[in-house]
Image (cartoon, rainbow, N blue to C red; front, side, top):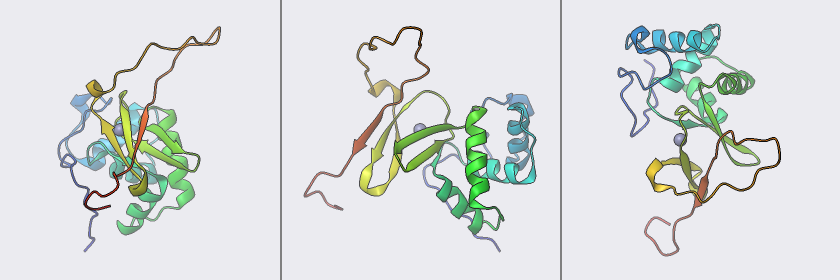
Length: 168
Ligand SMILES: [Zn+2]
């Protein structure tokens, strides 16, 4: 009996998340849906890709690092090398299935919500949270170098618990 890692605050796996794959193709079966999603992004749904896609996308919006996904795969008895997890996450990012959020030089999160939104990063807990879109007000865009345009604006607001608060 395999014990699954539970992720709090996410959508149950049977409800298809808002994805770029055409809704008509989604059956509610997470394995099938992962394959459909990969195909729609132009990727061949190999066994390992499908397994990792299934873990990533069947649980609603998530922020994972390669290490977290690797750990989860190991516990779920999915034999996959850490290098493969890295490669797959990068590949999924390249085709737009994931968004990469770099919080510092050594740590990158991959976000299954690829729409434009900003993040809180709680430094001492290494936790990334979405900022409700309406809560970030950006100032005027800076003057861009000649010949360039903005791809996207990523805001990471770094947090720490106030001194003297319970739980610190
Ligand atoms: Zn996010």
